Length: 286
Length: 312
Image (cartoon, rainbow over all chains, first blue to last red; front, side, top):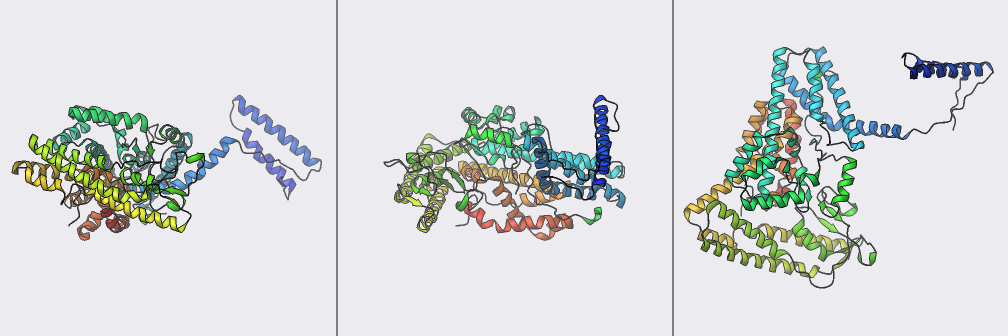
């Protein structure tokens, strides 16, 4: 296959123009070498033009493997942006409720920051899917979106309103933590048949020793069955085991052996299903 | 729904480690897809080393679907049953459920040895009766092989599903009202014990409902951008309308996260919409309405799953 230009002279000039910027700028040896190569190519192209060359055949180079993967990531990330949109819409709704005095120009800036956050988060999520890092680092799409919006909002919002928004965000994190603790406790209860007193004691201990990563217990992680058990929340064992009766401890140990975190791994659970506020709010502008 | 987003590398690795033991959710396959819970298990070798996925042995699928599946359908394509009658696990399963009930009574209202003995006898009687009933349904399927490419085979599969569903329903109710266990419990427990047991059951029901509500609300919280006042109002309304969750843990364990969320949306959909609508903004209401409509449509499916007490 060859690329053939209809206007060869212009094509060659364009090629020279395109090649030159590559070499312009840095002082480092690599940049200098690139500049020298570009100048050499430009001279050669100029000479060819003078010799009457009017067409240039360029054999297409196969895209390198990493480039192919980058393309796949880009495409997949684009599709995933829809999945993250409700997170952005929900966050924008909360900002609107807390920071109602934002002027239209500020709103547009915040919306732009939010859209950029969705793109970045979808990209980060997809990259982790492709390289097997999903669930292995502290990547938090919600947190990432919120941080970017907060950063954009802070200089634009009334300080009191911004403080109100932040306070709401903190309360929401506390609610998530409580829901995750309840989810852990409900699974333990279904498995070990706790008494009401045991549930109260474990709930209090889970709150005392709360770890943010336990929030991944929310959602459908608990629906998995491993060796006919649901995943054991053994990361929270210190808050659970001291409150169990001896027969429950034996059952707990069997459960952890059969379906502990070692076997389950750190499955990533985004818990977004595309529902929520779907329509974009005209208050934010276009 | 976008559920767990597993990373590609670790899923493959875990899949290798846990093959044959991990019942993956959301497996779909060709013609047998009826719901997200359907599972096709073709991991075992076919007889003579030849795999014929369209040939289904109903006998080998009976126990798996009655005792290993929680609502969906499992399809084993791994060859016919070995020769000879394999006993049904129905008796053991029912005994185990009964023993758990007695243990729970023991921990909440401290049974005497005589009470425990009588309850154990009642469990044994109910379990045997259940096993006998299951065996009568299961027997004709043993060694019966059908071709799922053939309309007659598909018809047989549908009849099989109906029979298994009846047995599932029976398993759910084996110690409920009308059973010897229920009658014995009412007669052997004294007033104090009965009150203790009722209080413990009520506490467990409320606890599990609260867990379901908070799990679901954590999702709405994010997608609707609720503030604390709105969240508190919605949670209070939901907690005040606690449905009649079945209290046995087997039933509760059957409720996967999707089902739990849908149940909460069913209850939300049945609340008075005026105060609910006044609690949220117009935009939030537009986001909430489709979820409630979906929940409303799910009531009969949820009831069919058997984790609600139904009026008799």
